[in-house]
Image (cartoon, rainbow, N blue to C red; front, side, top):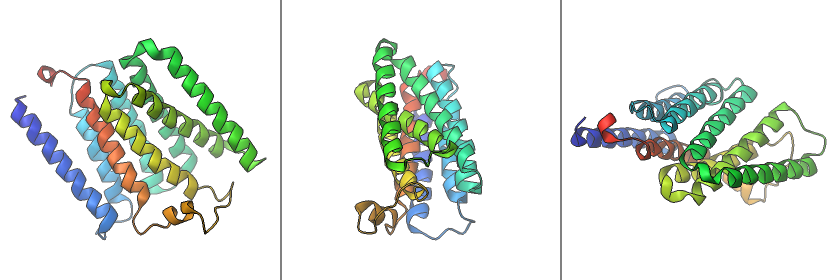
Amino acid sequence: MKPIWRKIILISWLVLELILYIFILFLPSPFPSGVLHFASIILAALFVFFHKTKNKAILWLKIGFVFTLIADYFLTLQRTNQLGGTVFFLLAQVSYALILAYINPTKMKQSIWIRAILLSILFLVALFVVSGAFDALLIVALLYYGMLVSNAIIATLQFRLNPHLAIGLILYIGCDTLVGLSQSAAYITIAQTSIWYYLLHFPIDLVWFFYLPSQVFIALSVMNFYSPKSI
């Protein structure tokens, strides 16, 4: 495919995502709740699947987006299965962890230590904060959040190898920190005078303010993995 067509496709895709982003954040939707949100993630996935290279990193990126689509189907479109959706988001983060291991295998031990330490801290903090309120959803959510944050840290440490992936994962943290707080009523109490309460009741949807750009940047990371001649 000629470079001019790749640029046209890239710009067209970014414009479509921007239009959906504006509708999601600022304009009333003519569709049922969650439809435009889910459509924006489908669009991000399609951009990744457009790249035909057999590179292992791209394969795991595609698998990660499949898991993300399933998770968003449960949590964004249907809003019926919080545990199932969180499990698939966790699997997406495992896919991104495999990408990070693939692009920089020399840092495997460092990555394992980062994940082990971060997950240990998260579970210890949760044990202290929620006391005996542990359940399956909380355990999976902690595993997911720990994988997300550790992926973001590792991607940032090797930023030059794939800056798009690092930025996308950092934005992802902003999204899921707010999601976790919004779903935390069964475990902790958020004071109405706190900054977290203010952010959760912000005039625009801050979850999607972070989430859609995160998926766009993660999708853009595909361009760091392919040879244009192979498209």
